[in-house]
Length: 216
Image 1: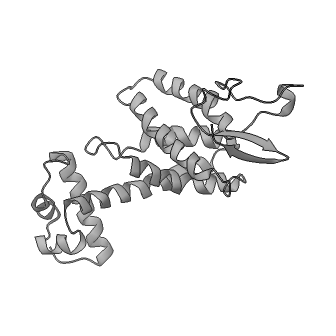
Image 2 (image 1 turned 120 degrees about the vertical axis):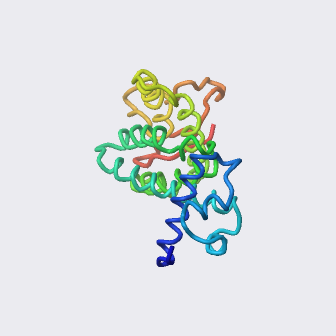
């Protein structure tokens, strides 16, 4: 195959790598397989990717960027911050995996979380919060955990349950209910005891009109 411009060559090699990953799996895929599938020589492949691990990282990175772009478009269609968080998480749970040919990867989940949630939370006034990094780690973990929960379920029941769990337990970490919801009593998040134990993620409160995260 004649060499295409650099970006097109790299994309063709990544396309071939995805095909080979689906065909052989991550453990058995060889660089020779990818070069043959792409129609390029081995030296050309090694010019772009030093080894198989670098090639797999490239596949993951491109997947992360594609999913993040689609997720941001989906989130932009939601009207409220509540819906942006719920529907954004649901989208990533359903589409965030890089396919069955690659195992779940915390680094990939975190990269997607950064690309998606930093602008979304920043627009909501949470982008400079002291606990933003902790919240991003938590969202990435939730993405992996809940994706495993719905994986393999074609019916809508699992997704309905996951969406309900997000609304009940995740939203309060970012959006505190109005003070009048509990007149005369300090606000406590669901699952949190008087001792401060029992909550599994970052918490939120409202100080004036500003929302902020607070660790458990």
